[in-house]
Length: 255
Image (cartoon, rainbow, N blue to C red; front, side):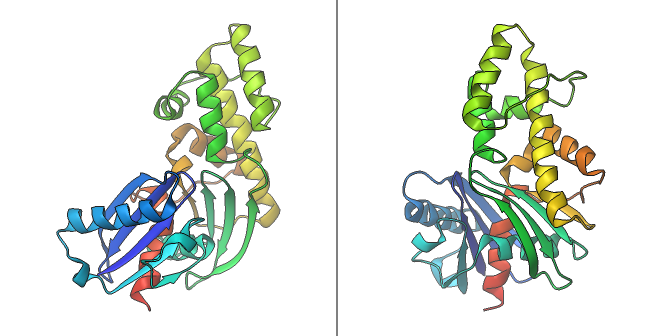
């Protein structure tokens, strides 16, 4: 079996791949020691699939913490791994929008699943999962509640500042004016979507388009980005935050 481990800034993800399909997956918090989270993921994968270490043929690591993965046979950038994973899910994929904990990326994918080009925001928390954590905290909500609150809201308030620091201040000010939490959450999704759409438009968007990363679980945001780009995202059932680990596992099968 082949294993891909993606050590992100917030979560570590793992995939077991048999050369044709996904046979197991695992997710845990990265914590302060990426190496430990990678080893934890490996242990969880072995347990859930009923496998032994001797069953492992190759391991590929990816993500910002990949340099800490001493158990990996090879490390590959998350850009290439997301492209590879997206191509496996959808061979006609040509654009991948990935929003992670510390950055957001738009990736162009070629016909064979290779990365052609990319654009990235990694300079500040705006446009990242971290921004949503800060916003949810200001609204005194957990992330799951925040992500689920938006779709049913008909009205949204305008969020003028996408700087994570100043946006928190703006949210507190809106709460003081007794603006409903639901409208603020919806406004945050709309403002965030415009920023991501701007990043995507600078690089260009070609169908089919996949929305991946942990933030892709936010259905309200997904709908807002889709509207801002005037596209429909390719539907798939695989957990979107596992795309990098999937690509890494596929690379492992090709070593």
